[in-house]
Length: 385
Image 1 (cartoon, helix red, strand yellow):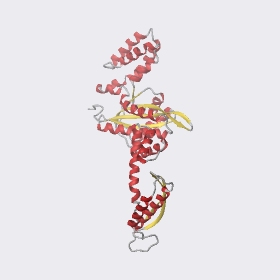
Image 2 (spheres, rainbow, N blue to C red):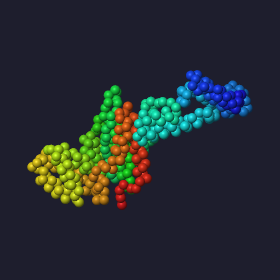
Image 3 (cartoon, rainbow, N blue to C red):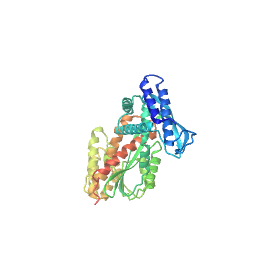
Image 4 (cartoon, one colour):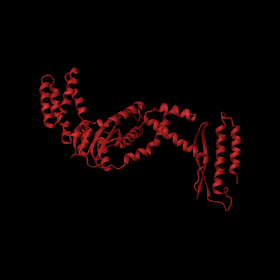
């Protein structure tokens, strides 16, 4: 049986003589590593292949081909396998740990907003080899297990549910398409915010929203008393189908923005927006209705189209009056989602165009996970006493 110490000494001497710039160096290194792994397997088994020995602890079981990235090039290794005893070459373990650590680092950098091009440069500096943006994106796949666990984790009781959608560009079947990124956060019985779910899809808006809401319920979402969102037509249709008995609050910030589209002139847009916001600053529903009448009287002669729209839509912004006054400021808009929306845009602005739906979902959910973890350590979002 070959002595492991003899092998290591032999290999060290040869490595000292190698000229690292030689084209043959990777092939020579392959042979040396394969020989070292064979010697180590013999040491672990207590016998060479086919050798009869009382010290034998297990048996050789062939080889597993593996591509191994090194600073001097790709190596084709044959990793010895065993039966009846656990074995993995020690000469590769450190490299494996280092590679996993690097992949995690690169994946985290990707999520934090570093472009794939910049991450590629970091890889080149650390590892002495250039990598493409595609390879860096492959590193990010190490996040998939974490992402899947987050998507499937069980939910529970939440009083308030905030829903919103943003859109990203994704390449699909050779065509650049707009993809919906749906997000849900909830406020639990203790007043803490949680990211409940994020979903990316190229499907029709109402179908996607319905599937998203059904998945939240399947995971155990209960107790919802109020849903806060913008006026998404697909979302409203999905809510009627999935959560028809839950009250809905239209975001008054977006409602005021929508009001500007009904202004007869650009000069009046700001005035109209402020007038709408003023309605919902009332101390109760009755006062809000009184303010509505005054706004309509003020603008009827110069903005009749706006007044007609307001009388039809303003009731959708009044639902928050049915809940505790100390919660009003936080349940009449979707500002609770502001941070996650901002972080998504900051990062996706760097990424630009996503190569697939999966790559976008991996990124935005990873962002959501980190914000979810931050919220768990911050003070409560609402006083629920």
